[in-house]
Image 1 (cartoon, rainbow, N blue to C red):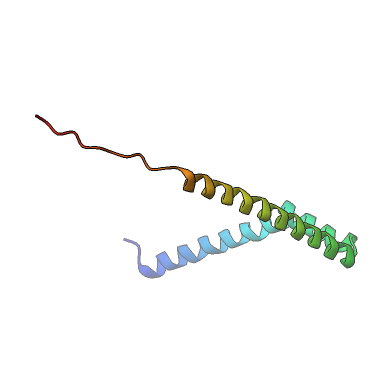
Image 2: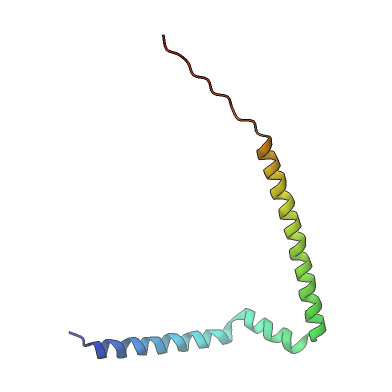
Length: 90
């Protein structure tokens, strides 16, 4: 039977291995590499302009989605409920 101390030591070792793997992957993250290159090569005013343009594109997409949602809600409001009638059995 494994003692609690042995189990804790095993879990701590596994945690160290997982953290090392995570740290190694961080250096190979393609998005992190791209971000680092952008920060080193592209001037800050250009990066700010690119972020502002991205924001405007997202706002445009939001307006498009809001319009589509509104049209869907309007169409749903125009649907008339079907009248049901009961049939009496003779």
